[in-house]
Structures are given as structure tokens and as C-alpha cells.
Amino acid sequence: MGSSDEITKGKAKVTIRLEEKIIEQIRIMSKEDNCSSQNEFITKAIEFYCGYLSMNNSEEFLSKILTSTLKSLIAESDNKVNRMLFKLAVEQAMTMNIIAANNDMDDISLSRLRGSCVDEVKRLNGGFSFEDAVKWQKG
Picture 1 (cartoon, helix red, strand yellow):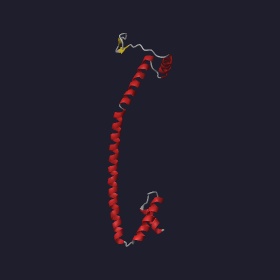
Picture 2 (picture 1 turned 135 degrees about the horizontal axis):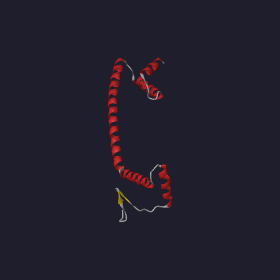
Picture 3 (picture 1 turned 45 degrees about the horizontal axis):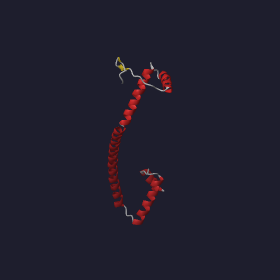
Picture 4 (picture 1 turned 90 degrees about the vertical axis):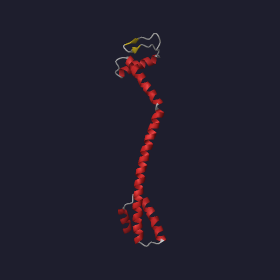
């Protein structure tokens, strides 16, 4: 602000030169925005642009915070899924050992069963239930 600027009621008077097309846009847009004056519109526009520039400067900072937060959430989710998969694997191992202890199955039959199970699980898109096994065993 130069020496010709006046400070009145907390505001400084500033002289600026604008292209005619910008002045016309200010006239039109200030009415559309229900501004009481063109000065109010220009003030809002400058505040908006300053905020925009501030956000661009803090983009790297915000990006780091968001990345850190997302990594933390994903890690927490991974831990929960891994714990549940471990519990499920233990239960599955127990079930398989009980069945294996009560059935005498040769290697060829076991290999055929595995291939059939792979095909059936693929056909059901991984959604194989106990009810599906019962239906499959009954033919």
C-alpha cells in the first residue's frame, strides 16, 4: 500500500487498474452474488483466492496427514483380518484332522477330491457353504 492510500475505519483505500472486461464482470457478478457493493465482491474474491493459495501451499502437509491416517486405518484393518484368518485356519485344521482321523483315504482319491473341490468353489465364486457340501455329496 503506497503513500496515497488512506486508512479509514480499519480499511485502506487502494488504487488499482483493471481491464474493462474485468470491471464489467465485477459489476455483473457482484449483483448475482447479492453483494452490497463492488468493493464487497472484490474483498470476497481476494479472500477466496488467498484461501485457495493457502490450500495449495499446504497440499503437501495435508497429503502427508491423509496418507499417514489411511496407512494407519489399513494396517489396523489388516491386523483384524489376519487375526480372523488365523482363527479360521485353526478351526479348519481341527476339522480336517477330525475327518482325517475317521476316514481312510488314499492319495489318488484325495487328489481327485481336491480337484473337484477347487472346481466347485470356483463355480460358486468362493461362496461354498456346509449346505453346498451336503447337496454336492448327495449328488
